Image 1 (cartoon, helix red, strand yellow):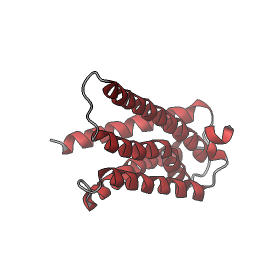
Image 2 (cartoon, helix red, strand yellow; image 1 turned 120 degrees about the vertical axis):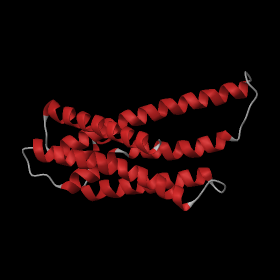
Image 3 (cartoon, rainbow, N blue to C red; image 1 turned 60 degrees about the vertical axis):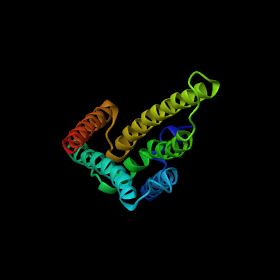
Image 4 (cartoon, rainbow, N blue to C red; image 1 turned 30 degrees about the vertical axis):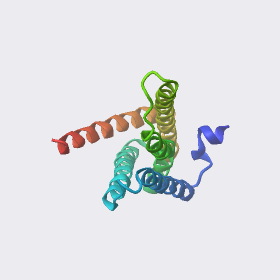
Length: 181
């Protein structure tokens, strides 16, 4: 059970990076399958891949700088980057699978207030719940990965991770709002 809750004490850096990259590629493949053949293009694949990688690189870079400042130990960048990518696996995999499921259910258009309509609505709520759980799971894993990789004990590792998470999400929202104008 402890290997599921905190795999970072048992997982090598190479395996963490390999599984993280494999999950990212799987997500891109699943999203392409969901949008095949009408909406698929090379630019969309690169957009999905770059979005995942930019989010990961921003967060991992900020965590690395924070670890250099706050950790009493010598920090390796590869440890921070690899474990952070592995920690994103729950969100990445759920995003890819939900893309396929939403692509499948999008073509299904039941009459309002019918049993099928209720089933589709229930499916959307179920996917919202699964997505929320995967986000929390990724955040917990990300925090544990940072604490193990940076060798920061107690609550200070959690606080540093949460501050970095908020800063990255605010920066991303500012960039999105800037480019959407």
